[in-house]
Amino acid sequence: MTSQQKHTSEHLSVQAYDYSLFGKVKTVPMDKIRQIIGRRMAASWQNVPHVTHHDEVDISDLETLRHQHNEKAKSGSRLSTLSFIVKACLAGLKEHPDFNSSLDETGEKLFIKEYFNIGIAVDTLGGLLVPVLKNADKLSLEEIASSAGSLAEKARTGKLSFADAEGGTFTVTSLGKIGGTAFTPIINAPEVAIMGVSRARQKPIEFEGQIALRLMLPLSLSYDHRVIDGAMAARFMGVVRDRLFAPESLL
Image 1: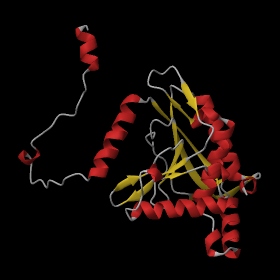
Image 2: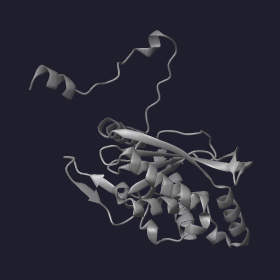
Image 3: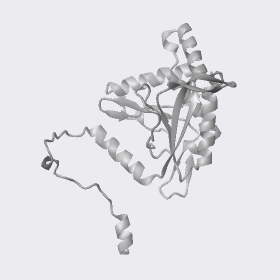
Image 4: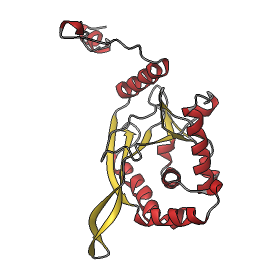
């Protein structure tokens, strides 16, 4: 091994300091789950060439449809905005199967999965957990909303099993009402893509030849550039955007 090869193969780490030299410091041990998540995210970032495609979609009609449905529905069949997003992503995965794949360690083989298990990132007191909605393509909007809600509750109450969090093929992570206009989600490797969802806001846009105030939802699609290029990402996002803009197509 040459000196240059040896240098590039070494692990580069952030320099450590004695922070107490600069002022008072409180030391807090990292939660075990956060440590595991941190290592996985660092490995993904270091090994996967990330690119993020940002876009936004008009979900005014979607929210109107959702509220109308929920006013008439029983408690067990209520729809969430997330359920529409998952359905729209499933449409994208079926039209562009490379997004539902994993790359082998050599980078020579692509495993395209014919099942659709959607990871749903959940913010918990113990850190970010990703329960997996198995065979999501076989579920209705109501079933997706109900199942995702049940998995999120299990994650927040510490009842999530290993089986609940394995086998994902694509992940959706949402900041919901917390805020933000866009972000760059880290891919949940060995998956090759992840959809980030920021807070929807009313914005003035051109609509049907006039300026109108519409509810716009920011979307951020991070993808593995070894598998997916920019044009593929734009086409995938186009499918998701079109389905969300015309929500009747997802019913």
